[in-house]
Length: 395
Image (cartoon, rainbow, N blue to C red; front, side):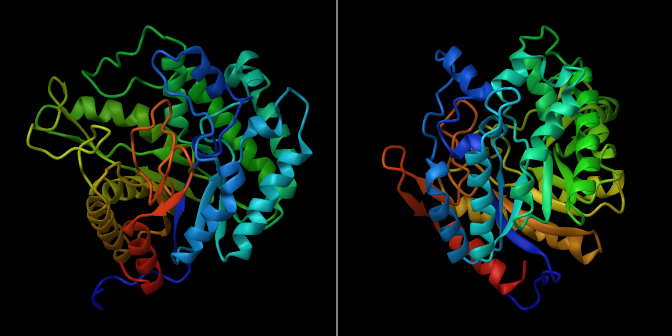
């Protein structure tokens, strides 16, 4: 790498992310497992996923051997509390060992406390709209104290709460999925939005009291919203509902997780689709690595002074050279932000593994391929490339 490329600040971490339900397998007490079984006509099952519940040491070995410095993974609430009020010491010990294992390998464990999945009993009992939702979540946090005390310095309370509130509408079959703006995602359920903000802030207060020095925040699915002539009003309304209200809720957090993949563009009639010649990823999203820089800058504008972690950024592609090109361009944008003094503390690529993408095995976001039958891991060139960048300390 050229010596004139931006140097990473001291303490800046480079790593990769995963989510429990997407890689562990056998997550039978969760609402997503139940949903998969109920809809085999339109959802592929997670099944054994990547078998990372048992193979996590191998995953961490590969991450560390490549030269990366951090691993973001999630704790599965439904394993900790499979039945309301009944907690599994074995599951707590499992995740404690993961934290210790990360530290032993020189990796910082960045732990997500909720990554989309809930215990089935929690959803059946009212979920986030239950009047006791905050207490129920904090009760779970009380039980995982040994995990956090084993060497965790940074946590994400809730991954993409804006998407959680949208999924509530979708999974409930809400008739109001049309956002009225001419395209884009459905608007988040307002009751769930307000509840998640309360739960997050209650969790932050509890964690700060129970775990002195622990840095707490949540992550938002950034949309890199743009507009062409006549689309400003629609774009503004969309960004407020999908993104900005969630960012402002993090104004008192220790950090904010930035998660960006592509952009959303509005015109006078609604969402503007990319032209036919524009490259797309295998998920159908526009190939747009500049989304990360735009998400960082917008987050800094909305909540100035809150440190950022890029907790997800990546591309679903079967061409690993395209993954490297996308990531290189995204990181160059991040580097421009660092040079201008924007406080970004790290970059975590999505994802470490090709994994279960919520009802679909086709997307391939991973730095490591996983054989669906044998679970054999095969590192891709992108893993070594990102590890070399981390070791070189330059973008």
